[in-house]
Image (cartoon, rainbow, N blue to C red; front, side, top):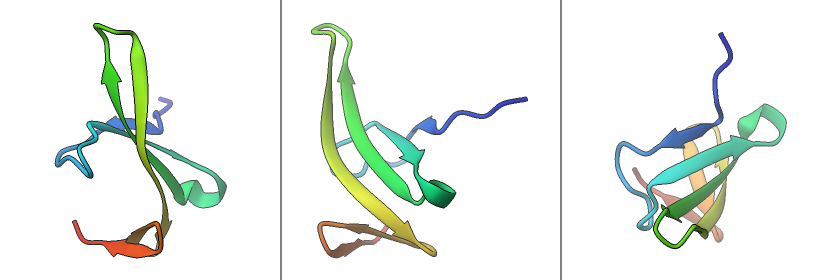
Length: 63
């Protein structure tokens, strides 16, 4: 069974509802919100996962 790199978040990060993982070892993350009514997607942040730590804009994000 194939799995998706697009996942709803259990706890919102920076107001996002979804994330997508990509890149070598799925180390990059894009956090975004979908507005179905307007048919739009808003990217809220792009980060990099290093080990168990997520970095966005040079800052460690604690979850």
